[in-house]
Image (cartoon, rainbow, N blue to C red; front, top):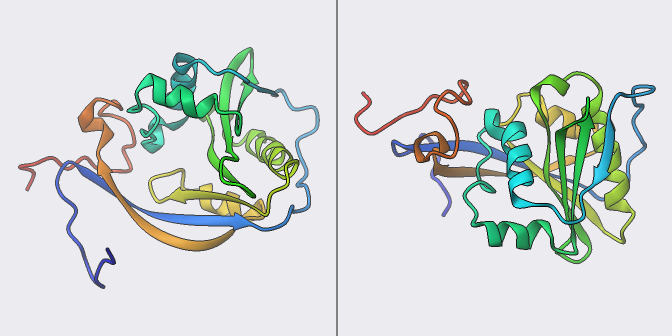
Length: 202
């Protein structure tokens, strides 16, 4: 359905965001990284659902990531253990603090399905290192494009970061979903930049 020009109401209990889809059709030049970074990256070949959800929540709760939290365990593990899905963890101080997931299930393409860091790592150069490794891993396979999407609920610097990394916007969408803070998938105090609107609010 194409929304008409002008305002469209969003039901109480829902969240709405503007989603920007971006892609790169060729491998870009590598961006400079912090020398001797205090981070390590490893691939997790057989991720456990509990481990994955813990890291996913610590990275994404502030930005209302919820899709992988509502998946049944069997469905989640079928995705993250698929031979054409690669999951990586960025560690700092002996703890996993960054998540990278690359999805190659569509032939010739790679989706940067999830990419993020916990709050303490923001602004430390970890994002650039993680993106360089993501691009290396993606273009190591015979793909024609690497793509990602971000939205207006995400970190305010995410869109600019993806563009600096070599991605080009190609589509815009509206996403509407149940507010995860009202369904128990996120704490009510999460994402204060997105107000909760419940039925009965004026």
